[in-house]
Length: 110
Image (cartoon, rainbow, N blue to C red; front, top):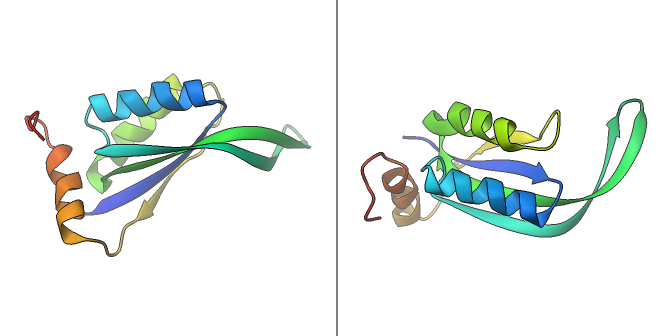
């Protein structure tokens, strides 16, 4: 099974926590990290925007990406949220195995 890192930006720590908790509790991600207080510059509606954001880094499997993306989009305050998958090419094998195990239905003990 292929593991991925999903990069998501949110408008606030509150939104990041709400989305992150849902992803982990619904086993769409094995874990998430939230990185607060970043500054983002981007084009939106014909103007450059300058906003504070919070990053979510979600560890999951490629097979769960579409469900994760759809769940984030349904919860997110942005019209066009950033939700992108980055393949994990290498890593500590026990950690990668844990990601795969914990995102499987029925593994409540992990």
